[in-house]
Length: 171
Image (cartoon, rainbow, N blue to C red; front, side, top):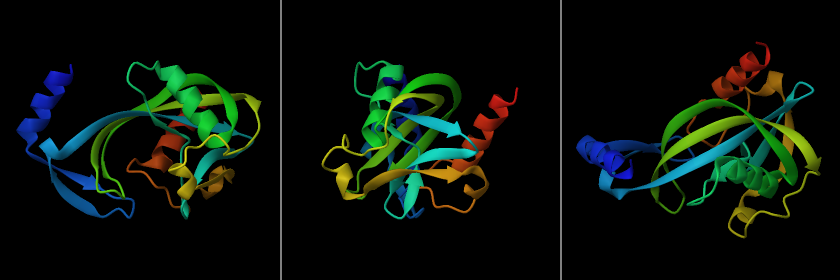
């Protein structure tokens, strides 16, 4: 599978990577790194829990470690960024992402989004790593009616993802 993906990417030659300011960068495919990632959508009482990053937000989650189970990765990432223990629910969507980091690394990432339910813990950022401590603050409950007004630090259509999760809840 990895060899097939590498062949597809090499035939594409260049891709557009988006940085955190939504600026586009044309990048040769051979310069990309690959990173599958998983994120939790925690929605309750008319609000969604988001990870506070810089002056904006993202969903709690992150990279899946090599050999790590998807649910284990999601529960680990949510615990690190929010302090909460969650039960992983239904998958909401899966997206491609091409992005550039502040360190100028360019990534092709597969982003997997799941609904999650809180089963324990309390809000905290005590488990984030040293690098993340530079830009992550306490997670915040954002009222659903405000999601179109806030800044998201990711390359996905975050508002659409939240709406898709809510549609699945109403079925």
